[in-house]
Image (tube, rainbow, N blue to C red; front, side, top):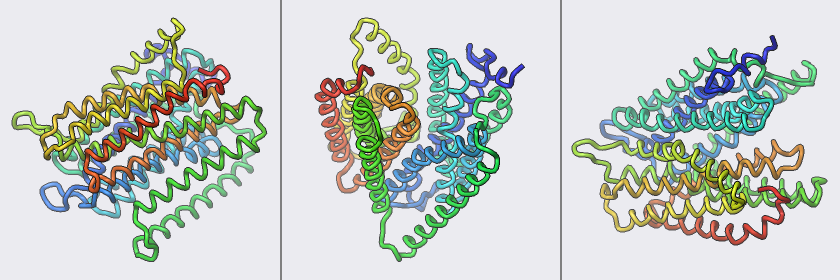
Length: 496
């Protein structure tokens, strides 16, 4: 019997048994990620005194840290994927990444500024190793591709959202209600559970995610040494940069650093597409499709810059302005971070059926129009919460405003995120699919970074002013995308 046989044995809801291993690995990883994320900005802005002291940072500084953290998580998925492809294989990258994530959460569990930031760095590195490679292994469980692979990813996606639902509830209960560091600890224990079941279930993966290379061991060894040397030098440069900033030699704020990173991302992506379109040796049809991928990059970055306010400005709004009391009990603000994942679990199958039904009656909208609808849904959600925030006093805004906002944001997410990702794979020239998916992750990273910087304007603009601004920008982008959807569709070459 071949080594791949265990991975192909049907025993998990009609899918390969290995899917269960990856389902629960991703569920626990998302539990830890979203559980900690729900506490992050609340902890950083909480007063340093009281029964549950925080860090006492300003909104602007906290939001910049939040933006840098969430953006780097996605940026490091690019080298994380490279390491798995060229040096380790996906199976090893997932286990090493999960171990580093758990260490990061436990580092944050110790009440110290130094261990807090060290923990964030570890989680960024670990997530960059784990996140892209779990998805790759899922795909390898279905070498035949087709509908069975799509169905497998649908089951896997439920694991993501189950973890995202449970994390804020449990970590939020212990973190907000008892001690912030208990919440960070629980996130770490969640990742440990994920690692234990992953190690026990690795045998069911067979050859899926194992290291495969046509290079000789000596060539791999040389490449590995270069990687570790470059990584070590990069870490040393980052540590030196951090020291120079903290000591005042470099007069830079965290907002300056975040803004500089955002500008660098835009310049790199712009230069990359200029090279591909004008000097990449592509056909006229491929150049048109590359232009559409660039347009999707812009739309997706705008979308995530609003959507990811969930963990920053919307989280602070829930903490400071929302009426979360039910009799004598006050609901933790972090619990509202589970609303989006709840709606995803409920409505993802509905939207999947909707697209199939519309295609059957030949009314299926293009991916360009769906992306526009995603931005309009995001804008509508911010108009709702801006209405609730207008002239509101602390603790008086009904949580219904936030629930409706998250519902509209979920509708927008289901229109733009899975649809856009699928469109990128279809539009990408042969041999560029991996690079274009990397561009997709960079768009997500840029959106998260902008979200953090925008959330820092709460003090100057107020919640209502910030939410109105986000609503206007995303709504304007959505209307423009609607107007351009039909003419740009001609560049897609039949890709829907």
